[in-house]
Amino acid sequence: MKKVTLQLAVYFYATTLIAQWVPINNGLNGFPPTALWPSGDALTMGTYGGGVYITYDQGDIWVDFNGDLPNLFVNDIRTHLGLLVATEGGPFATYDGTTYFDCTGTGLTNTDINFFTFGNEGITGEFMVGTDGGGVFAGDHTSPWILDWTPASTGLSGAGLTVNDGAGITGGWAMIATDGGVYRALPGETEWTPVNNGLSGDAQKVRKFGGFGGNSMLIATHGGLYSTSNIGDNWAPMIADEKLNTVLIHMSAIYPNGAMVYTFGEKGFYSDDFVNWTQMDFEGIEGEVTAAQVDSVNLYLGFTVTRKNSADEGAVYRKPIQQVVAIEENLSAPEETILYQNFPNPVSDNANITFTLSRPGIITLTVFNITGEKIQTLISSYHNTGTHTISFDVNQYAKGIYFYSLQIDGHIIETKRMLIVH
Image 1 (cartoon, rainbow, N blue to C red):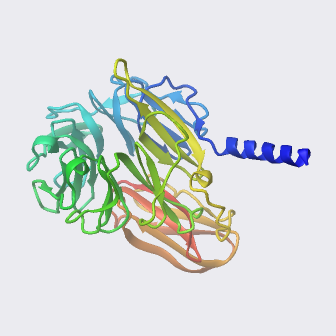
Image 2: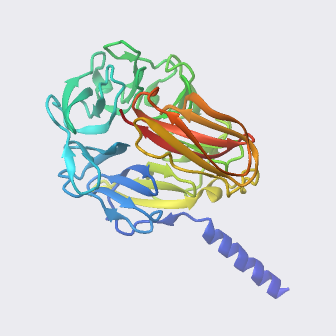
Image 3: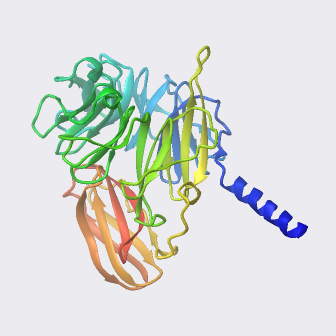
């Protein structure tokens, strides 16, 4: 009896260890994390005071990616051709983490940049930045990474001039998230219109967008998580009265419904149906989540601890997705079925997408835009076991980031990102 009891105790202890959040801070120096961004097999992180770091082994070792970056107070990072870095001293871009191009150019009168991203070629130009107190600027190339910036803040005032996130949809509408709520500019419009019906109090301090298709969108606010199905005409609460900083939508066959929504701030929540939300156990980790990312294996969270009499501190943790959401492997999606990265990538003319099937089935290969809206179905037919390649012309798409997703018999296998340049 004692032997059985001891074995049960050992099993329970081992299981508890496996389920814990693992600190992954080797190479970091305790700076607050501000953004996490995937780049192929790598994961890049922006920090406030320590600049940019990159890992190629799921966070076991982080490597300085600062090169000659002159300002290490990084508010945000994103990818577009290269890595776009928003700092308190201006916008920068790099291809290799060694040489950084100063994208301040001309006309940028506020260089405290909260985000730096591509625009919609309308009100936001080819590129746009959101600033801390200075509104939005639209940028256009004069030469590679040399930009002319034009103020694009008509309609913004007060807290609306602190712009935290932006979504510039090529050839369509644009939206920005501000400390004064959400603003929208539809095609052809030259000023921002507030769209805050349903938002009040702390919910008007909007931190991040999360797109999930068509005219629908999620926003993480300091008053909860809200959704719209009509590009902001009305907002409905999904999680109320919680301080949230970010929201992620992750598509994977590991989830019963093919996708999971995560949102984080002082607490963390997840849902696979947008209705029922489960609070995540941070297991006593100090601080609030200020950066989050997920890959095919792990969820990564960056925590910031605010100190009264000293500089803020930060730490990064990871945990396997299956342990986070307490699910078993979805056996209906064969693990040998693989969706490969399109070639070439970036692509300007014709793209080839290859996938390998370990069993026959009804295959659907779909292309989505940056907001998650389905824009084309490339394949929807029966395919036999083996490797298949499809070639298609991307000239019909405007330049920007797109996603393509492979399904077999209705189950999502994998989603890849494709960058189109012209």
